[in-house]
Length: 190
Image (cartoon, rainbow, N blue to C red; front, side, top):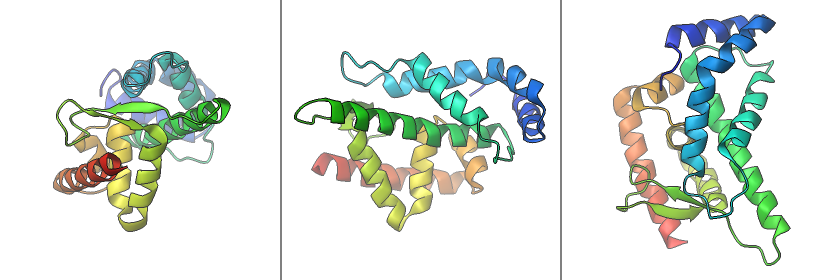
């Protein structure tokens, strides 16, 4: 990740935490393109005719991020970790709403890249099924679920994930591999 330097983004986030309103305006250009890149990646595998655009997803996530008055921002990685959680929530909410509006149900598909899925060429899964699988994973390994959320929904690197979660790079790599295998098994069996 990297349009704004870690120090610039972290300094602005700390200023926002202290209530400096100008800092929010200065943060936008440093994180906007990165959030948009994440949104494009999340929406790349959506079905044809999907109406949620990357810009709309970024705006929704960014609005929720800057409205987080209770959050004491620690770093750029912390910001993008929270963005990952919010991006997941927006996508799941959107999928639920779209499913409820269609007669006969149906599902919203997203593509799991080869990095995420253990199958070559990726795997298309229902976003609601992925959310349910992550909720199940939380019940027996919350750390793995958090790592998936940060890496998949947030696009964080191994290093950024380790920083956000407060574990070693090796722990992230191990948990990421185990969680991917478990999710692949769970989602292909469904």
